[in-house]
Length: 255
Length: 311
Ligand SMILES: Nc1ncnc2c1ncn2[C@@H]1O[C@H](COP(=O)(O)OP(=O)(O)O)[C@@H](O)[C@H]1O
Ligand SMILES: [Mg+2]
Image (cartoon, rainbow over all chains, first blue to last red; front, side, top):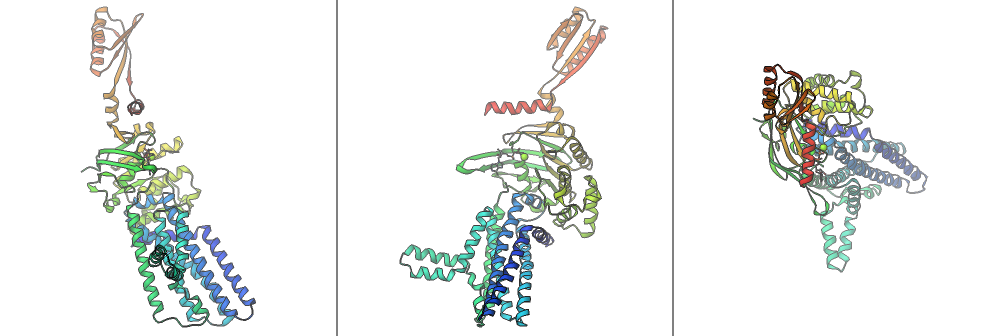
């Protein structure tokens, strides 16, 4: 455990001393602030717009951080051969990967807390209160980010950073269109399109399970057990992805 | 029990277009405990590939390897192993202290011992206290090589692998690294290092192996490799009668006469001794004795060019 923890801390330390992270974070905070400012200037559904824009920007920037920082940190370790020094120590490859993953998650958590801190402060300043549904929405965004990070990690165990980023972002987009994908397939006449979309639908993560933005902004109640089921879904999916990543990583030759 | 043993170790890389590169062909090697072994070969010979296989960064296409009697697949064996990669890159964002502390944690070394160990290592590799809190991005090439060695020694390993530890260093830097290796050798460690620079190896190694195109061409003590391959000596003398000169002419390779001086070339030690005896007994004058020793460089070049001709 000490070994995994050491890798976790080192990953976090690298992320914190990296400029990309700060640039993304500052940009995110500007967008969150800007969207809220825009919201306050709109007449009418002010509240709704502020919450919607705030949550959306947190989700998107969280994803960008997960993808770019996540892929970057794993790739650098292999490209700069620093991984040689780690794997020449009594460290199992899975310990390296798990340590790296947890380090990335911890980095994301800290970043998310900063963004959410700013967002909630502004909401609190305007409303004088924070809805419990907002906290639930943020929790689900974090789960989604954990899943996206696992996918980014999986790709970076065997692919180049550019391809990994493209694939991960593609899965992120498809994951949010999951429902439309199913509808599209059902309506289509051609058999192969029907089957293809069906397979995609079942393999790709359904990221809409982590999206309750519209429910929150419209003050609608969550379906029963939604949080529990989403959490279970997320954790299972993450487990499978990490397992795959470890299998690939164990077999890999470091050139 | 051997410190390092490989049995038919082989690695084939598949590059694009189905092309195969046989980087290491059937390596059988035995290194004893406490030995300092120099693994020599030109660039691309397969030295780094061998090390990566032994460390577990690459998986062999076939064959097997053991360190201290344990199969290298066993991760725990690395508790007794140290490794300095070729052209090492390090986390430039860490300070020297943080860097070494990170690696101590990968060995479950207790907190109390950690601090002491890091200080000892910084001292061993000749880094000053003021360097401990400096970020590695500010280190020179020589300092990085030293921190790299410190990193390889963090667990006080029994078996130490060094990949080109002298590359990119100036003469002073090389001497410093050599001194560190001598210290390790004195404390009974097994050291396996790769190099394509022969002068570094001759001074340090108990044995060397010469690798060319993935094949181990020669292995042995430097004296043996150098002696059995070819040895000759030139003896210059004067003041002998024709009759005695004739005796020497019988068992020497070549004899050159120049006014009253004679130069005889011999190809083994016994003949040289015999000739000296004849000169002494007959009150001749021994002018000079020049051993013509084939250097490691010669052997190295010969193996490489020989290989070039046959393949
Ligand atoms: N990852 C790789 N993929 C393909 N070929 C490789 C790879 N690594 C090394 N080689 C080839 O294997 C041979 C041996 O390389 P290497 O072990 O690095 O040599 P050395 O360390 O002796 O200079 C070279 O011909 C090199 O091109
Ligand atoms: Mg090499």
